[in-house]
Each structure stands twice: as structure tokens, then as C-alpha cells.
Amino acid sequence: MTTRGAPKGWGNLLFALPFLAVYLWLLVYPLLAGIRLSLYRANLFGGEHFIGFENYARLFRDRTFIQALGNSLLFVVLTVPLLIVLALGLALALNRGTRFAGFMRSVVFASSVLSVTVLTIIWRQILVPDGGLISHFSRLIGQTPVAFLNDPKLVLPSLAIITVWWSLGLPMILFLSALQQAPRSVYEAAALDRATPWSIFRRITLPAVMPAVILVAAYECALQFQVFGQPQLLTQGGPNGASRPLVLYIYETGFNHWDIGYAAAASQMLFALILVVSLVPQAGRWLIRGRA
Amino acid sequence: MSQARGREVWQWLRYAFCAVMLVLILLPLVWTVFLSLRSNIDLMRQAPLSLFGPYTLGNYGELLKNQTLFRWFFNSMIVSGFSVAGVLVLSSLAGYAFGRLHFPFRNWLYVFVLMGLAIPDQSVILTRHHIFSTLHWHNTYLALILPGLSAPLGVFLMTETFRAIPKGMEDAARLDRASPLMVFWKILLPQTLPAQASLGIYTFLLSWNDYWWPLISATRPDMFTLTEGMAAAQTNYAEVTGMGVLMAEAVLAGLPVLIIYIAFQKHIVSAITGMVKL
Image 1 (cartoon, chains in turn green, blue):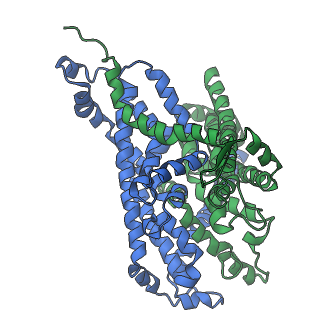
Image 2: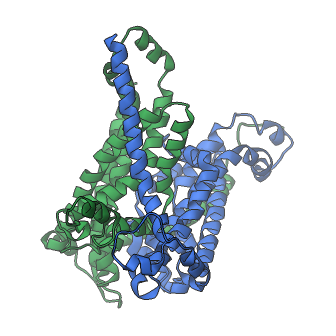
Image 3: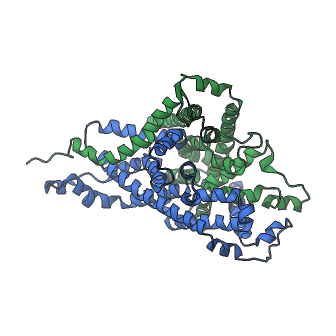
């Protein structure tokens, strides 16, 4: 009787099979079928015929789609840098063992566990001009309350602020865990050398958190690019499409107009763009790790 | 000397930043609770609200009479509960296979599974919707639960967990000719319990808060999850219940996840930091 390392053989695949079945059925197959669907003119009533890349060509002529694409990109630009700066600031300020720091860390993350539908109930009553929290402050200093969600220039920035409020917890936690991995001894040596706080930040802290910053940037770009609930619930994409992001466009095209082949083409664009925004920083991270 | 001054200024900046952030983060939550404690009539009047009341629990009393709200809550419990169970079972089995056993094409299959991490739910929605339509499964619990089980994140976390268990743990058992299933159940699974807790709580929050899929799959109000129901509630509160009740509903909908968060904070943090290893 010989004992080998771990048992080999097809039988062991059985353990992975239940997951693989669901994975193939509800994620891989829908993706491939969606790519196929995007090459057809199709609606809910079963009419389907092959039109090649016509749906994609139509997307680029479609003003509403271009606007939605632009809105999603702008939303990423408005949220991700602010999110990273604020979360990094919080992580630096709260990277210590005091009770207050612990309490504050918990508070920052707390808003992240709320659902998007609760988020919008909360923030509508802050932003609306009649009776919203901000409107009370404006009246106090004698200003006319601003209709944040009805102004085409203010609506996306307002949604971005809400989203930053909602999403600060995760980046902060990742930055904190990166900071805690930076060796104590380096900081002690720097303190002995009478290094200034700024040079400590630039020479020691920043390099220590840089991989985490890139990771968070990639993750948040992909995540915020998929923004949906906030505009769908607060503005329905208005005014005049100024806050309609890509996912809301896909939702409306697919489930309100039932133009499903066309909506599938828009979904593939979303998938491709998310792949690009999340793979670029990931590649950078692997490069950094490869050098280290 | 100036060194010490600089450090002091730094310290004050830190306090100021923390104070400002604390207010900005808490104010919306406090405002929501504040509004939920005011009567609808009070809120309709447009006049500035006095901090000194009158306060009332009437809105919360109103909620207790609301049958649909309890139905949504119940639906959310069912969907989130079974999602957690399903994800834990599937991910543990697959994680054991990928992290601890050998079979042909194992590494290729694992990479194939990890590639799924890049597929957003939004980009597969049309065909996923079609699958459940042809089965006539929309507006069932099964339809609300199944898509969540196809996400590969849990498999990744569990594979890493099983892989990290010291080698040789199962050697003695294998000498006794225990089957791979026995080794899994008796020896390795107990070692993964902390990771199971993290993944479980993470999955619960994800499932409880999911808006996208329930919005598309559950179209009958009696099959709404609480998260989806809160969407319906905020679009027609003016005619149905009034602002105060809506705010009380928001508090009630937020409370379970906040309690879970406070109780299991450590696990949530470790689930999040665990994902970074990829």
C-alpha cells in the first residue's frame, strides 16, 4: 500500500461540479448568448434576424447612447479621485489604536452597508429644494434653495457626492490594511532622522499604499462605471438625460422598449469598457509586484 | 523647535479633518431619523422644523400595520438566507477541489472560473432574464436566489483558504483510507470556519442590498425584496403613506444591515481584505 500526495483523478472534479454548473448556466452562457444576441435584430416577441454589426453601428449614431456613455465616464471622473483622496486621508488619520479612531472607522464604513434604495430615500430629503436639509440652511442665510437634482450642471456632481458618501468605507479599509503592513521600524528610523511629516508621507507612506491605491482605482472605476440605482431612483436620468448613465440606458432599451438585440450590443460595450478600466491598473499592479 | 510646531499643526489638521468628516457622514443619518420622528402633517407644512418637537412614534406605529412591508422583509430573509447557504456550500466544495485536490485541467479550470470575476451582472442581464422567462421562474424565490450563486468570488476566497491550511493535515486520515469527502468534512472544513463566516456575512449583505436583479426578476409586489420595495415606496409615498412613514421605513430597512454590520464588523473587514490577494 503506497500513499501518494493528494489523490488524483477525474473523481475529484465532482466537488467543483455543482459550482461549475451554475457558473456555466448563469454567467458564462448568458455572456456568450448576449454577444450572439447583439448581432441580431431581436425583440421580446421572438422576431430575430441576423444583422451583423449593425446594432453597434447604430449605437455610435445614437445621441442618447453617446450621452449616456459620456455621463458614465464623467461620473467615474467625479467620484473615483475624490473617493481615493478622502479615503486615504481618513486612513492616515485613523491608523492608530485609540478608541476614537476605532469608533470613527466604524462610522465611516456604516453607510456602505445600506442599500441603494435606502441611500436615495435619505439623500432626496437632503437635496430637494422644498424641505430638504440643505434648503433649510440656504434659507437660514437668506438664499433661494438650489434644486440640485433638476439642474443639468449640478445633477451628476450631486449624485457623485452621494456616491462618495456611500462608498468611502471600502477604500478606507483597504488603505488601512496597506498602511498596517508598512514596517514600523522604517517609521522609527525616519523619526530618529528628524524627517518632516511631509517627507515621511512622500518617501515611506505613499510607496507603501501605492499598490492599494491602484487596486482601489481599478475596482472603483469598474464599480462606478456601473452606476444605476442612484440616478434611476432620484432623477430617472433627467433632466433631459443629463444624469442617464450607461446601465440605465441598457435597462430602458431592454426592459422598457424591449429592443433586446440593441440593448445587448450596449451591454457588450459596457463589458468591454469595464474590462479595459479594470485590467489596465491590474496589469500595472502585476508589473509592480513583478519588480519587487 | 519648529519640528515640534509642525507636528502640532499636523495634529490639529488631523482633528479638524476627522471632525468635519464625522459630521458629514453622520448628518444625513441623523436627519433621516429626525424626520421619521415627525408627524406627516408637521412635514407637509414646509415651515422650518423646530428641533424641540413635537416628536412622535406615530410613523413607526403606522409601519406595524403595513402587511406588505413584513412580506418584503420576509422575502429578503428567505432570499438572503438561501443565498448565503448556497454560496457557502458551492464555494467550499469547489474551493476544496481547486485548493486541495488534483484532477486533470485543474489549473486551467480555476483560471476559467476567475475570469468570471470580470463579468458584470449588468452585461448578462438580457439573456439571464430570458433564461428565467422561458422557465417561467420569474417572481419565484428560486429566480431571486440562483444568479447570486454563479459569482466566482466565493470560490476564489475558499480556494485560497483551503490552500493556506498547512500541508499534511489530511495525511493521517488518508492512511486510514478516508474518502476525499470524509477528509473534507471531518478535517479541512472545520479549519475554514472563520473564512466561512466572513464570506457568509459578505454574501448576506450583498444579497440583501441587491437592487438590480430583483428589479428585473420580481415584478409582482408580493415578491419584492425589502430593497426593491423601498424603491417602490419612495416613488409613490406622497399618495400612499406620507413622508414621515417613508423615512421610518428607511430607518427600518437600514437597521438590520447596520445591526449585522456592528455585530460582525471584524468578519466584514476580513472578507474585504481577503479579496485583495487576487
